[in-house]
Length: 636
Image (cartoon, rainbow, N blue to C red):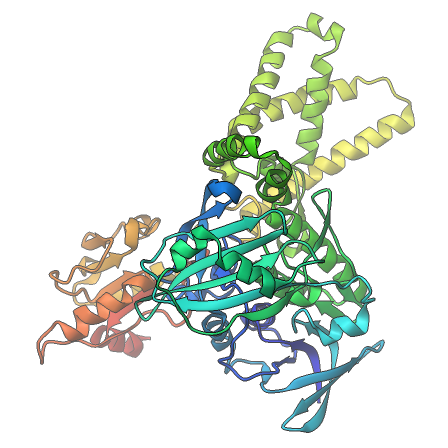
């Protein structure tokens, strides 16, 4: 059987890839092969980090009711030797992989792709125009053919073994065990470091059927001389770990699993084998996309799966797909891994003498509350970003001219110019303001306007200096081409940002924007009002936790009888039209169907036919009383 794309493996990378093809209504013929049958377990630490959770919201928006779960946390704590601790904030969740992977898999079932479960990939063959995958299902060999093979089959990937040298494919190990019956549910993720053995132990608590459980285990951030089972026993004798494990019941035996960590040198990533080639891409663990210090790999699996699908949808040039995949993936990893920050937490304490460890951690703790680790956020935003359609979004011309202008102000003869002191003040003021905003934790694209206006003025001064620069004809021509080309790019970028990609989540200058779906919401409500007995005077309930319903007040400004709620009020009569967050659905069902006495219950139906978002990752749902919905259908 022949396909356009074969995805091997239905973990986070494989399902994210398949879901991207599905959501884009791709005409490509897709086959997803999974060696087991869902639901199935995957040995893992089960933690979803601040990098993974936003990706799940973007790729699998229908899971917003389930993820984050009741086990979500906003902080983690690191224990160092001698009882020193470090606490940091972040968004985390703990969901056993048997549950998580099945949730992701359910979103792609019964869609326009073929799925083969309990199908083991035995071998592959890569050819110029078509690749072959030899599988075994029910003890029968099957051969599938495809133009592209996307390998999401884990650290022991069949595709990886066939496509790259394995002499540098060294793995470290980790161990996982489940426990239940903890004394209490700790609202933070716990790490215990053993600097001597380059190892770490984790306790990731979660709720299971209202009972306190935890995923516990140990791993290493080096690839040699580490015995995970031996180290696990060593950690279990730690007094701090014992204090958490007291009275815990051990559900299973410690289970080992391999970790194919990314290589690093001087806090930079180094690929030890190709992750893409003619007709294949390696995704997730198959590409070794595992954080070199923490072993976290779900976020990079999700990103690589989505990226692979996007590139195949946008491009037919094999070589360009391979180049773009490696380039964009490495760029994301450098940004996502935060290696310099992680090194400050793990490597530096290991090298410090014990008397210096406590003051160092206290300093890091203080800075952690005051300073964002991504201090280069605004610089990167202004200089080089790959946005929708693989287009470069950049203000590099302005930044270059502003830098040239500021350097020009340092010349001795610049002091004789008329507006020297004003320009110098603008330059210093803008530079200091940029540094302040870079170190503040709260970051949004619009914050850069505070100092970018000064950059634009400096850029004008820089342009005047360049234009007065004494150069020959070739030099003037180069300068003219640079200025004109940069100006045309800025003009096009302004037009594209305003009329093409104004609500695209991949636009780097878009942040927390309203989805285009808001127009659909407004149109549907207008249609309901046209058949409702009360017209625009009908009662509408809007229910969002934390009153997070903006900009609905603007779009519903012509409706005087709108009730704005942060939770379902069971005492208030039910409206005929309800716009609500998915989190409110359970209480709404109680209000409509459980609370009213027999004979006074009304049936409610979905108002929207498809997934509808208020903003990226913020789903809203509409409900309308059935009698109104019936009138609407008759009129239409």
